[in-house]
Amino acid sequence: MSNKKGQPLRRPHGGSYKEKLDSAGEDKPVTLKERLGAGVIAKLKEQAELLKQEEADSARRKRQEHEEARQAERKRNENDFSYLLNNSSQDWKKFK
Picture 1 (cartoon, rainbow, N blue to C red):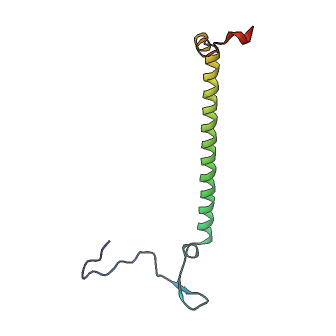
Picture 2 (cartoon, helix red, strand yellow; picture 1 turned 120 degrees about the vertical axis):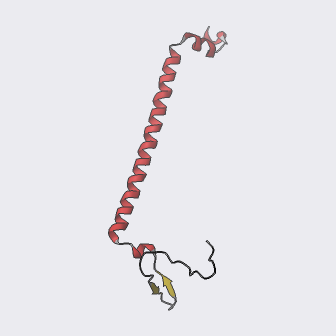
């Protein structure tokens, strides 16, 4: 966003901007982790773990449904004579 002439730059809302001094005496901006409370960080970590767990569960369910569908298709094909005839080996000599 460009600054138009005569308009001051806008600063983000959220209170005063505090800065810390590091060991060298230089200004160091406050990190988000330092600005947020410990309770908020704990809630965010719990939510992240919950989302990872839900994602893993959905992936497992999707894999299981795919496996069940594949097994059902294989069972249907085993009972279909025309499928077995079309996909069987044409070398009858090895069955003598």
